[in-house]
Image (cartoon, rainbow, N blue to C red):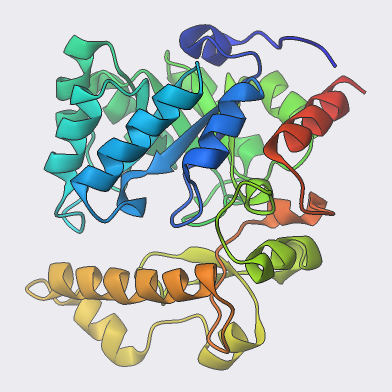
Length: 321
């Protein structure tokens, strides 16, 4: 296995391979991030995985104490995250290496991070938003394509990466649809500086989710991934379990009506998000009849539950075949 694959992303972060272990709600944790760093890649954790500021600070300190390499935090930067200001302050104080922003304007994050030399990568789904965050001073964009797990974008990576490459002057990190090294090679050839890969890492020894969730990643495939609006109001990918088939994937007429009401929209979205996240939390840590497992189509390539290090090793070997 080769020691390095050099790209703009590896140079920017000082990692061996241009891979971010994507931040996954309720899944990403300290052990996974430490293992990612030791395997020569980097990992990010959603700040919302920690209920309190003390828990977030403890996690950041534990990663620093156990691994010598870069890691990041994902911040939801819209109004549904009422703890954003506190989370950002903690990330800046504890000098995380980079922040990934999602679902809103990254302006405050960029302004707080620039003086500390903390990189800011922004989730984008189109050229218009990519140019906006570039103008604000983002260090890279994470191009979320139609095969991403969680909140996917509308375009395929074959369309999105060349479009962004043509229009943007900052590095492009491709997110979605990567489960093998050959797919990363194709994305780098299209102009990406690296990839953000999540779903295959759910089926790892280090993931703290239930064994049933891990096994579902192995047992189901790309054809079993469906989009639902029931979790957060925004389209989100889940495994099409019998429970998902029973409850359906569309908001009810009442939920949809309330979501469009200008006065109530913000509060309905926050309530939908809260209820959806509670459902995910129950499913992630214990299989029940009401099971909602978030994942993307890249689970197609997961054949067993393995350590993070082995997944990275096999991925790079496939890249070089």
